[in-house]
Image (cartoon, rainbow over all chains, first blue to last red):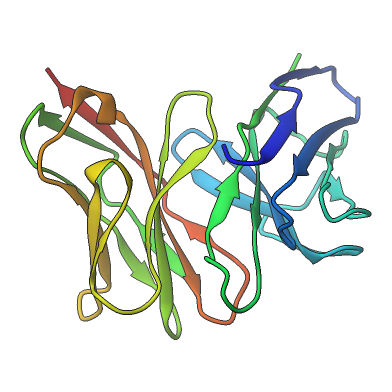
Length: 115
Length: 113
């Protein structure tokens, strides 16, 4: 799991409630990513950020929002607009630029369950 | 459009036998290819990658993969499987010059004692 931490490990959300998943990295990586994992569907990209104060939409953005105010932090908010948020959420980071390894490193994940 | 296919949902192999987990890809331009392994309720762990150079790449825990440009494949292999190799394996591709990684749907490897 490298130098990426995600919290909490398990999160329970009530209907209509917004929740925020934390992702922090101490790898000095520029790029950070959020993925959603559902059984049999692999990983789907929600948002990614290449630099501070900038982020791009992935494939499934409805009901999700992010911010990138600091290089080491990329929190994901799951809003009530996300109709089926129960899933395993993975954060990843990657160094960019010449001489970097081009490898994504993943955090341990957060399992979100809607009650 | 970029895509990755892992045609087998599950692969069963006896301990000590060689294993292969298949991956094919479609991407415009040069592909950067990756294999990751995931244990239950854990994040993905990097195994190996192909960026350029030798088509046979060696990675962690005795795994290797061969890049085949003509067949657009990047199959994961190991000469002798261990029970502890049982896990979910993901293939991923990123096209050169882009920032987005595309993951396959995963293959569950079960190594039988």
